[in-house]
Length: 328
Length: 304
Image (tube, rainbow over all chains, first blue to last red; front, side, top):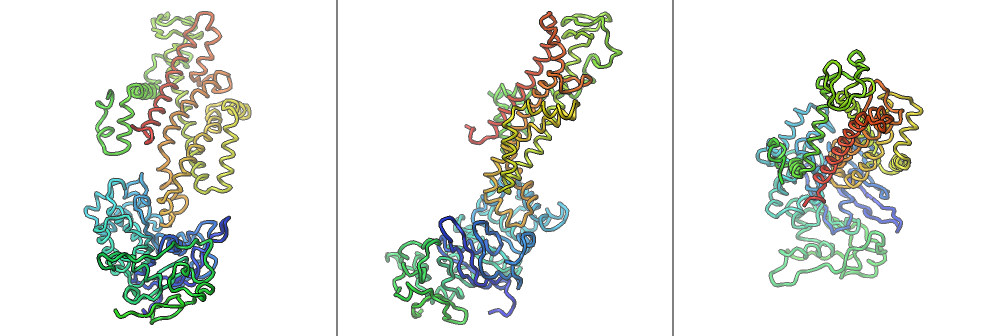
């Protein structure tokens, strides 16, 4: 582990939604650290609470949702105690976010330059000319050819990959300390996806930016992240270095996820599946949330919530019956 | 089919923008193209009235009572041609109409513009913040729209008294609600879209998010409403002036000109009321026509 102070440290975060149908524990006791220059992959199925974790960090949980417990430390300062205005000044400035679909997140009726200049001027009082120059540099930095022409374009005139590069450039405008990326490559072609991933890796390493990469795609995260947190039903069920998680997973859910990646199975063999669906956050099982779908589940699993077990130096999991190491 | 689109400058037709396509589609319809030309011509006449008019109808030194109630096409005692006749005081109706048009358009456009600013801002705020702010603004809108337009304007003027600025204020009070209701409906949809969430994640202040991100996405219906509401303001002002509680006699609008002549209508002096009436109808009709054309051009759902 790096001795430096983590850029982001999420401690026992709990975000609950108080709906008419009951309390939905979307994020329930999530902890992880991200150090400068490090990329942490937050992996899980739809509804596992990974996106809500991202929004909780930014303080963008709307009613009926609320952060009910835990802390979000950004460079050692607790963000959950911050006021609205203080959080607003952090967002887009020190902490940036990248979304899944750039077609939706870029304003359809504004030119790229207008949007970027507005973003610069939301946090820095500079002239339009200086802001425009900053925007041009940001576009060039994410590998956009002819940035001057792109600045004059509208979002619908750009390709999907180009739009996502613009979104990344907008996120990088203020050289943030932390980027939260919410499945930013899901909507792209694989070749474009690879280019964007490489670009992101380079940018983070160069500027020592910490990044949380939220994704359901384990293959993408495997190639990109330094560490992986596997989330299930609002909890981190297993976390560790990429190599450890990929080669020696101990939680049955992680193994199930890995088995669902087609390239990990020999041709002709049936794909492994995780049977069933993720439980509703409104009605979580009493014990381990994964127990109804787990082949190893025992009575203990069905009645008690598994605590955090330590399997290695930085390898943690929540399973009463971790799968033994298989010879790699 | 393409009547006007061939002679329009390149920037309106040949550009790969939505605006360009919309304008091309709009001017492709002969009726709308004609209405637009009429509007533009009338606006130019209104602006240039003091220089174009054959006489200043409100300079008493230029008037002569001997020339009173001359029929259209008659010549006055000094040889002045009264193209559209003259009124009881010997005013050239043609000149009077030019000045009346100037007043009518001025009042209509300025009250439309103020109503647009007030209504659009309140509509955006209502949709963006929601909650009790939304309820307060929109219930006020419902209340305003519940009263007949002319009744509210009458009451306002009864309290404020006469005058150009007071008429404008009365019309703004009546009309902001139309803008607010429309803008709120569009903005309510737009503010739920992801780009607004993204703006929030970029740390935009509410003011910046509202006016630089949300507003540009709500402009199309605002333009349409503005056109229609300016027309409505002009006819509302004409009604008020006709009833004698609108503009002062020193700044007569088309409505006042009509009022000026209607008592003599049955005595055979039809031109004093009818010509300003025809001009008023032409103005309001062509503005509504343009508004209609804009609505079809700017609404993607109506495009073939």
